[in-house]
Length: 80
Image (cartoon, rainbow, N blue to C red; front, side):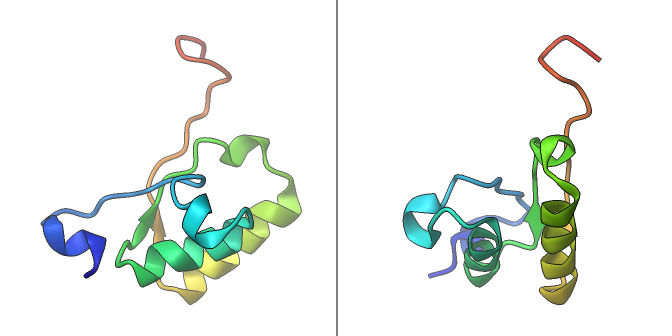
């Protein structure tokens, strides 16, 4: 059963939530999220990822017809 069949809204998981199912590779985790029915990704670590990794994530999001939900543009809670 798809996880998202329990919900009527678009929920955005983040990297690491399914690493025990999909492994440590971020693109593999993204594919797992898609296979479970998710169509959004939340990545608070995006600003700290190298450009190559950001491009890989973006390319796979586009290929899977998924959207980026949110990412945080601060270094710690309370700091902008």
